[in-house]
Amino acid sequence: LDYLVPKAGFFCQICSLFYADETSVKNHCKTLLHQQNMEVMGKLLETHKGGNNIVPK
Image (cartoon, rainbow, N blue to C red; front, side, top):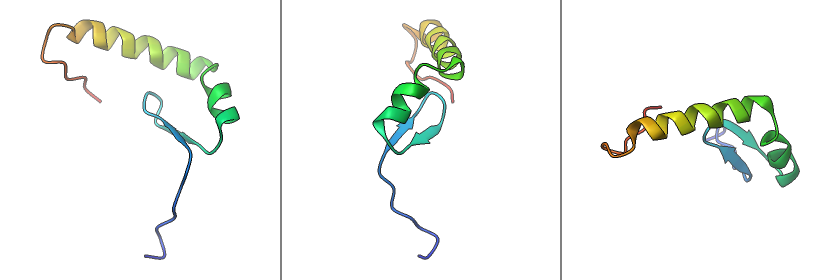
């Protein structure tokens, strides 16, 4: 179990990135990467609307 490390923080499921504090999360949400991923996710959700509601990863 030496390779397991407890973590506490925030995980952006859209970008697959982990942040340890709220300030970092707020900064991340303003980045171009996050904004672009949000746009892609929105289009995916719109495409699957009314379907089986499964969004591919």
